[in-house]
Length: 223
Image 1 (cartoon, rainbow, N blue to C red):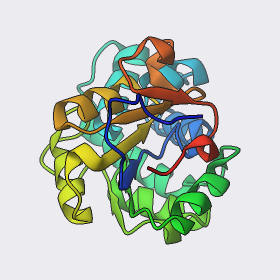
Image 2 (cartoon, rainbow, N blue to C red):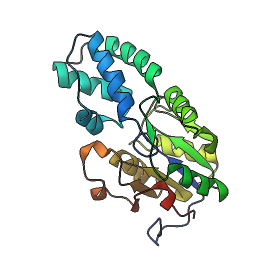
Image 3 (tube, one colour):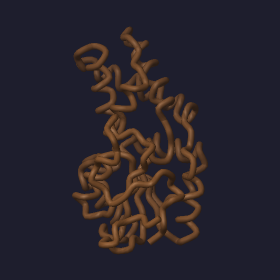
Image 4 (tube, rainbow, N blue to C red):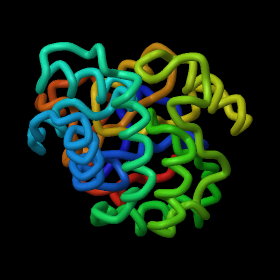
């Protein structure tokens, strides 16, 4: 299949999202968030809520979780410290690499496509997860939500990642699972492909403005 609309130039590098794109991390989020809530003597949260909420960074996830179970987020600082501790402990234990990811990364690597992982997950957590799932070696750079002054859907992380790869944005493909990734790519001038199996805040991913959709990462055709 063609990865991009014919009007797009061939891409020479790629930025790949992590949660919902390469790794199913809902299990990790569920364990860490519910351990945090238990410490705060608050009720647990369900996986559906988590799937609809992840993707905009840990700060957003924690604030939304507190609002959902308590109606206020005035215990954010306490919750943040607890969540960080629990997530560091469980990072990768309940997570699974999606089918086709390793094969897709191998194809891109063999084609000589420079890659960076670009995620809103904190950089240290992202790096540790990639290493645990034996994916770290595919990437020249790993940029998390704390790597730059803004997070996706702001274009800044994409523009800075393109600079790090030494390739202009118009020739750097963004691969993600949500409107966050697509909006950031559009604003940065990058082509964008979305996977169909990710989270996308509970909304149908094919309704997002993107250049194409794939069911597995190994369907990507290097430009």
